Image (tube, rainbow, N blue to C red; front, top):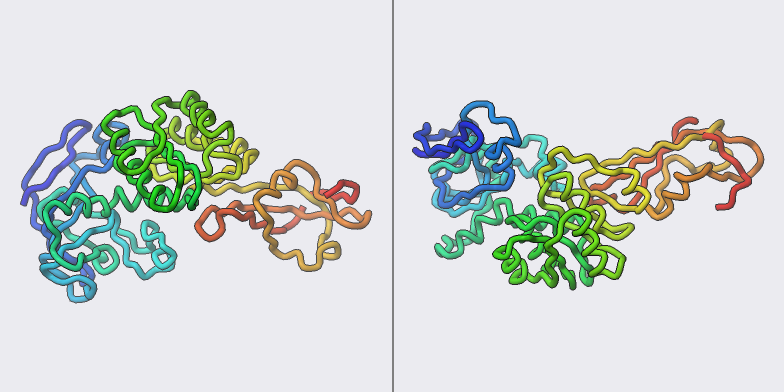
Amino acid sequence: MRGTILHAPGDVRVEERDHPKITDPTDAIIKTVAACVCGSDLWPYRGLDDVDGPSPIGHEYVGIVDEVGSAVTSVEVGQFVIGGFYASDGTCPHCQAGFQFSCENVASFDGCQSEYIRIPNADGTLFATPEMPADDLIPSLLTLSDAMSTGWHAAVSAGVKPGMTVVVVGDGAVGLCAVLAAVQLGATRVIAMSRHESRQKIAREFGATDIVTERGKDGVAKVMELTDGIGADAVCEAVGTAESMLQAIRSVRPGGMVGCVGVPHNVELPAEEMFGRNDVDHEDLISIWFTVTDDLTSAFPAVGARTIGLGDVPLLCSREIPVPGSMPRCIRVLAHLYTDRARRDLLHVYLEDAITLRDDLPG
């Protein structure tokens, strides 16, 4: 069979490859109907990621099931299937929570831009359509393999809700799908940041209300102008560069959410700036340390691990924590800002040992 091989930056060749075989009972073999190039494929193609010798490429695909392992139950030979861009079993705790990308048994593919593909964890990775789709529907179904699902994840991670103003940074396939997702989730204003006229047109067709062509500080300034100095309620970042990440973070309003799905390259998040503005980056985990002294249990008998609103954090962080009575208390507070789906708006404070507490501060 034929397949694409990346030999070096800028050097992609179509070559003869061995036909894949079932190696585990959970495998399936599919005959590829359509595949495409992901933005993440362009990093090594452009030389921004290392290329360690000839490598099969591609992870976005749809096809027809050609063969299944003995343990596969969810798909049958002859069905048209859409595949996830990583192979996941669908049963581990992370999969069950909706984060299949973090599956405990996650596996990658040996290049999906090939005539046939071996799919590990087929039951959790392949999704069969009710019937064989028409040819003109296949490109749309192909987007569900990665671009649309990733754009949707960006919007969900950013907490997009009806009535919101949303900014989308990035106008590639994922960014455009994030525009569509934001509209589907009820955003009333969607600001697409794009310099490409053809992509601007698609963004408009998908429901974007505004187009911003500026980048960096100028792009942020334009967003602020459009939002009366407030910023967006939510931002979807779909590029992965340092500039795009900063543009996303600085375009969101205080307390807003940023859903980051662009593969990050040389990105350093401005944690202090984000903390001061109450911005939450869904992909980040921030640890905040406070200092205290002595025993806190008599002051707060049920103190174990308590949860406080994210809006209260700057007060705790900027001064000593007051407690009743004149006796000095001592404890160290390790605060983890969890940004997974269930806890992204909360600060969980865990009390251990060590900060001086005072009783003469208001609050």
